[in-house]
Image (cartoon, rainbow, N blue to C red; front, side, top):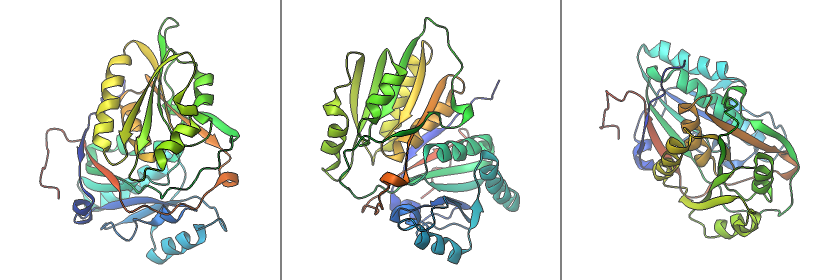
Length: 317
């Protein structure tokens, strides 16, 4: 049996984060302009990035040149690669480390690998700060996008097959991928669903999300649509925790995280808290055919995770 994964989320402001010194900053090099947006802003002794390998696509080459100019460490695919990057810093320091992770452009599989590595080494991590740079609004295509993969984000993120008489509950973040949420609902066929709709600083997002999700009309199964604010991840975590802590004992729970990656990251922590009891799923489309070069908006969303629950240091900023 795995040891319990205990943690606490705390809010933090971006100015406070910029005043800290981290031992390691992890980010991605992708084709969106916001991919490496935070790299030059976070103060860290070491920096490491996952490279998507999208040569020639939109802003990828510029982001890659930035990565090369900083001479940052290259993280490869897989949980072990993320663990190695963390362990190298832990061994060099000889004590618990402070880590910042930019999840803005991590796909759900990569996010699950990264956070699983953090979980395995959480007893040696003093502080984890998760950052998300929302993208500026771009009008979605409104096209039904072909599904490339639908299943666990990584193999370990699927729950055990439960008792046949248990209900199926679906927790889903909504985005503006046209028809994707309804497709996931039809495949899972939940007895009840909790669907979370994001609210950002731009008023353009809410009607776009509503349109992509058929005005939140998901058919005859019971469900509730709950709005959440992208820049209030601690509140979001509280809402998700209150649901999962209750239903996980009486139902098979699946999480499908469409929409902002801040939702994915918060939901993933709760899935990691309940291994083999909560599934964390990835719904993947043909990325590059529908790719957009997203610019960062003028705000960030962030939160702190503390694992040493008996050793809080409240003077972090």
